[in-house]
Image 1 (cartoon, one colour):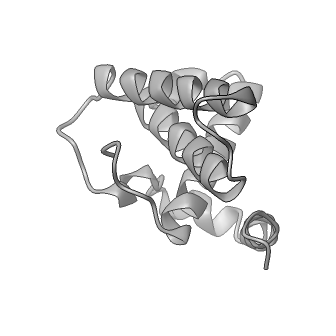
Image 2 (cartoon, helix red, strand yellow; image 1 turned 30 degrees about the vertical axis):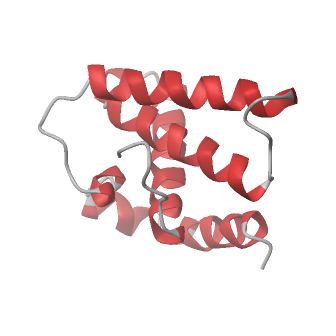
Length: 119
């Protein structure tokens, strides 16, 4: 995702799901199945949202470290892209069978997102 684009709430939820699935894969010692570039982009989007919603100053305090981490992750994403740049929705896993298995987990993501967005 380009630097100036602010992801929508649904894109952020998709990014959170992608990062969570990558963490799950790493815990199961299946990190070779993870597209690290996409995960880095998703994590950068989440950091950007946290910075915006938390009203962190990008030049001082913890905000400057969040900004540096976000920049690093975006650079990693662009240097590890396996395909041409795609739409922001590309953070979704697209694995329909896994989605059916973890359909109960969607509610957990929704609760997490609601807490994140203050609803």
